[in-house]
Amino acid sequence: MAFDFKKEQREFYLPKRKPEIIKVPKMSYIAVRGKGDPNEEGGVYQQAIGALYAVAYTLKMSYKTDYKIKGFFEYVVPPLEGFWWQEHAEEIDYGNKRAFHWISVIRIPDFITKADVNWAIETASKKKETDCSQVEFLELEEGLCVQIMHVGSFNNEPATVALMDEFLLKNGYENDMNDTRFHHEIYLSDARKIAPEKWKTVIRHPVRSGKQ
Image (tube, rainbow, N blue to C red):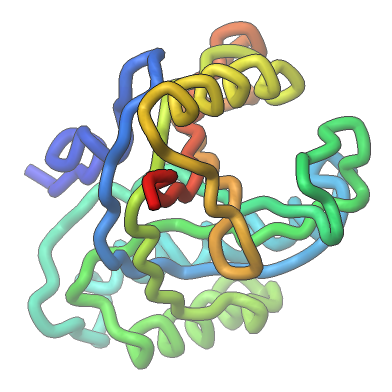
């Protein structure tokens, strides 16, 4: 049976609908960076996601090609994730989507190296006849975070974030978002098939202890 991160590491993908503190170790991803409204039809974001998935599935299916990845085992492609921020903004303005900067990522198993990703980028670009050159290998250690399961539209996230902030205040923590630590979302629902009020999204924020 293929390894499934969501089932084997539930603490990172299936939190409860109330805030919790978690320490996230270093993980490997394929990533695309960009700026702009993610809802723009055929826009930069949607093109980036297409390239990201092309590379993700090229890596997943590599065992059926002549290219062999050392230590490979079959796995389920994990859900799409996104790191989001707006320059010079203490709080995210959800109404100004054009101002979003983002790093969209898909997690990859630790046995996949940067060289393997480079192979997949070149292979996917040729096979899919699309430019995947913006995809990159990324290692990231989020460290101490607060997370929660948000159910509903992305536009309703501020109410869930308020619950997270209240939890931090009561438990001696502070938000620690900066130039390298961002608002993080993990998308567990297929927005094409499920109504917005039922979308499930993990929201994760970097934190630090507020006790000096």
